[in-house]
Each structure stands twice: as structure tokens, then as C-alpha cells.
Image 1: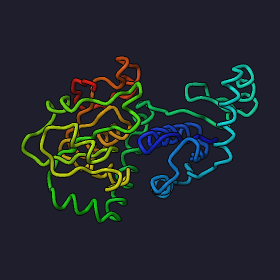
Image 2: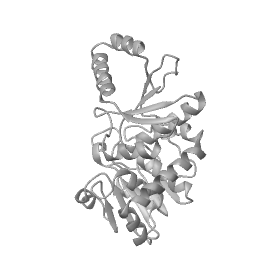
Image 3: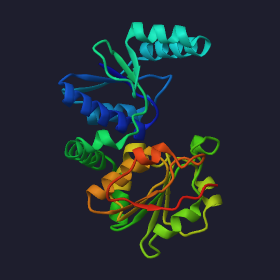
Length: 280
């Protein structure tokens, strides 16, 4: 069985947790494929393949399958009926569909913490081992953790959120969770200039994609004495790992700007404190 990877590292970790659950429950091998049409195929995808592949879970790249699914999406947009016929014939299912014997490819974002909870110890052990390996191989991560023995992280998600239903959470929302004493590191997918324009509190570092890749950012998040995340799957995993290490984690009480949201319940995280979210 194959699962199509979509999005970036945070999404990938959710579908990996789903794959672990399906592999263990059905005693089958799962292949997770990236492609240039739907997912990150750069250094982070290569790192994920190295860190998380195991006998029951295989990561690989297939632009052929990505193109096939792109074509099927185009056909479905023109004819829903023909799209359904093609999906049934090829054994393509969505994440909420029952898994049948003819299911060959599953698609979705799998943003449901239930899959993680069912294998929490296994997921925790594997991710802590993976992030330890990343930290040992990253001079930048080791430098930051040495320079700041105790720190808090604020994750600011910009990117495509500004004009999407998710929305960008206002910096004022973070204040209730911040510690005014310990150093503040800001992790973001935006630029340094964008962050400086939008915040009015002091900080020690702004860590952008030019500074750290997503796996290195996850290492910094999990090591924070206080981690303050946003409506981002990478934030969710940062909070999960921070809590696993006995640290404090805060996530917003609303995941999507346009609604109080089904996703908020699907992404509930035990041990995490929720703060009141306000959107820009």
C-alpha cells in the first residue's frame, strides 16, 4: 500500500504516524512517496527518508505517481463521475474512506492525533531518536543549545497562511504564554524583515529557513523550556516533543481563522496548554 506525501515536514509526520498505525494493525508494508507536484522533495525529504525509513515503512520519490494523481484531479474537476470511476479502478482512496483490499494509494493530510496516540510510545521513541541524530549532525543546533542553555521558542507561521482560511495568529496572542525572563528564539518560515515588522517584544534570535531546515527547527522547538506554537502541524509536533521531554508547551485554542473548527478537536494534544488565539 502506498500513501502520497503532501505538504511539508509537519504534515509528513502525521501521515508517517498514520502509516505506522496501518502497518502495525494490518501487518503490511507501507510505502510513502513524495513527488514534485504535491510535496517537498528537497533536503528535508531526503532527511526524512534517512531518519524514518524502516522495514515496515519505506519513503521514496515517484514523480510518475504524482503526475498520475495530478491528471486524475484534473479529470475529477471536469467530471466527478469519471473521476470516481478512475479512482475506483486504480484503487485510490482518501484518508477518511474505509481501507479495502483493492486500496493501493491513500491520499490526505492525516491531521488526526488519534493515530499518534494509538502508538504514542513508538512514535515518541522514534522521533526523539531522529531529532537526536539531527542535533548531533548539526553544528548550528548544537551552537544555539550551548549558547542558550534555557530558552523559550515562539513559532510564527507566515508563508501561504496570510491569504488562506488558516490565517496568521497575531503576536499579541503569545504574550499570555511568554516568560519575560528567559531568552526568546523565534522560529519562522518568514523572513527576518517580516518578523521584525510584526512584533514589538524583545528576542535573541530569529531562525528562518535560511538559518535552519525543518528538522533542525524541530530540534530547537523540542528543546525549549517553553514552546509557544501556532496553527501549524510543525508547531503541533514541536509541542508534542517538548512535552515528551518534560517541558511546557502552548498551542492556540483555534486552528482555523474562518471557523472554530473540526481540526482543533482532531489535533488536541494532552499536556498542552491552550492560549486564546487572535488573528491578524
